[in-house]
Length: 91
Image (cartoon, rainbow, N blue to C red; front, side, top):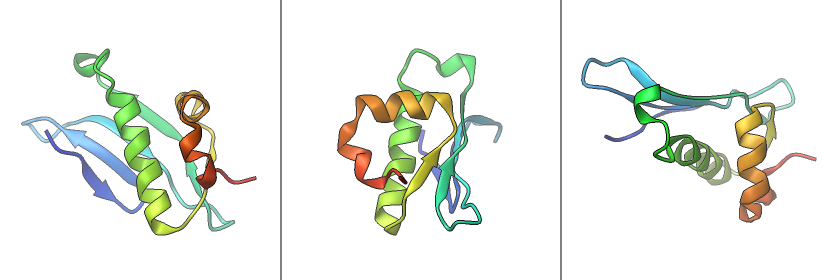
């Protein structure tokens, strides 16, 4: 399975084209992203999928040369465990 990417969303679909995992990181009025939502279907839980999604979002934001806020509780915890991505966190 391969992630599909949009400007503010990375997701995974099953064979029936249903979204089974996604992370949302819309651009706010301040011009910065905000990682707002990470969800993983129960069929994928325990496989590190949420972490892979947040990492993919962080890499996309970094590649864009942007920064992000974090309102998703999972993303907050993920960034605490991955200080190598702290350069993309907005003040």
